[in-house]
Image 1 (tube, rainbow, N blue to C red):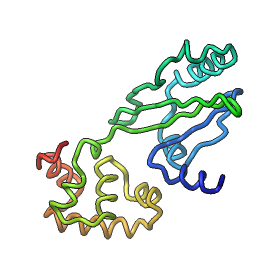
Image 2: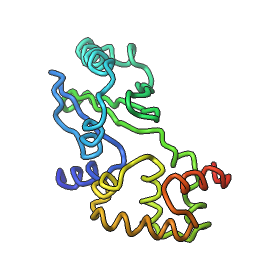
Image 3: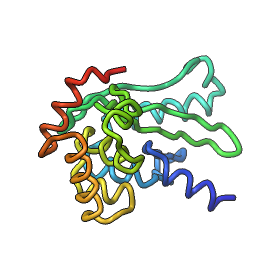
Image 4: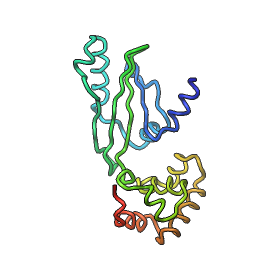
Length: 181
């Protein structure tokens, strides 16, 4: 069962980090590792995590943190807002986890409509989503576990189907097509 959970967590399109009571990072999935290669976690995360553990120790978690715990931040070097959503496990052992999500351009577009409009395959749509979100070919290849050449081949197909010659023209075309949701 642990193997299945590990596979699912590593395939998630969301970063996952888990801390123990000593504020040691005891788990991070592939998306979190990629995030940490590019950015630093906000300075507020360790003290907030400590306060959550302290509230658990004092049996006052639900009084001090009655609803969802999350923060929204724009990080240095990123054009996106990032959402850090905390999840808290009191048993069987106290843990605090953080889901890391990026507010991206592709989330603001109807990707299914774009896929239909330009007759893109599902894989081409996967590539397009990541291009719109600012990933480089090598990052797309790593995330999708394909070769960089395969990414380039899919991009050539996308350019041909959409009638553009590069990423900039592609992004401009899609932002102007009125495909916003």
